[in-house]
Length: 148
Image: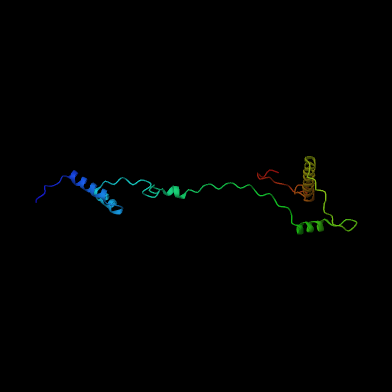
């Protein structure tokens, strides 16, 4: 017998009814052929599917700032060398502790600077006295313009 042509909606209904009786992979394939497949969600993509830009891949989190290490003390061998450099006392024992050298006060710094300046001035005056200028030797000194 000749069957009349089925409309599109009838074909879809037939496929849906056929896929409802199928189980597992076959039903998925039938659904995909029929075109009634829901958009894949995150579950279908195993949690993936999001796009990742190149700039986000290059991002490196700033490293936590570490506190600076405290200076470590001398080793025992280094301390022994220091004690040997300090010398020995009257009983022949190593001198382990020496008084710290005091820093200069402002007055001491100023005195040393003034003393150095005075030394420089004296040295300059002495150098000027030892060289005899041409005018002191009895010769005429001419300036750049030719006027004595």
